[in-house]
Image (cartoon, rainbow, N blue to C red; front, top):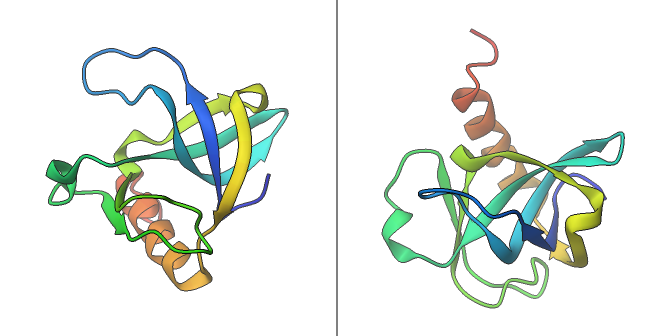
Length: 109
């Protein structure tokens, strides 16, 4: 799996507002059979929250609905949770996501 790819994955059961179940995720990187990923949601109410990015479905990204990337829910997942590759996010949009991740994790401060 490569950075910028969108995959369908099965997220573990969570608590509260944690994402769970089968859903698209964006791959940030992988090492040692673990993938760092960010889940998408179709819930339109989260669009205005900090550390999110909205995406319309395109042929390239493979999303089927308008979706919001929940950068604040960055997670580590076993490679075994990934079902199939759906598509990819263009470089320009990946740069925006990288900026959100850096800000969230306070990298560069």
